[in-house]
Image 1 (tube, rainbow, N blue to C red):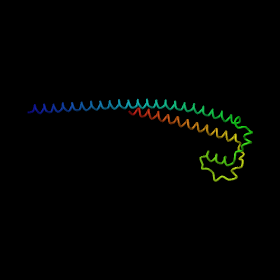
Image 2: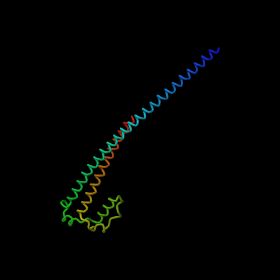
Image 3: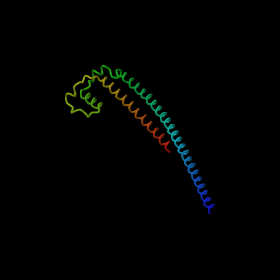
Image 4: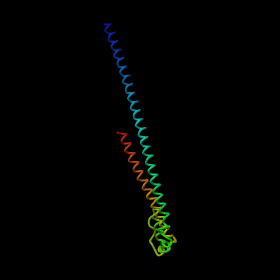
Length: 168
């Protein structure tokens, strides 16, 4: 009977040791898997960050180049205003006060000024060539803003493609 108890105790000790060994091996295996997964996630995050940085740098470079072209064209047009709107045209076509008031309100993003009257028909003293230069400058700024928006949209689309591609 004693030998059976000793054998049973030995069997329980061996079973306990086998269980403990399996448990530690399993925990060790899971820790190794977790480290490998973490390493892979860090590598993907690094690759994604590098790709996003490359996209950002390319988009900014394209934006700056295109805006410089737009601004150069605008400056060229503004320099040419005296060729297309001469001093004779300035004298022959006085710009009315009403036009200046309305233009300034629109440029400031305000509603149209109060009702027009006889005072709005009077000459403003602003030359037609000055109006032409201002309008050319405004359009240049508008085109630069449009280019900025296009490049921002392109960046966001590429950013989205990269971040969604990494998540799959």
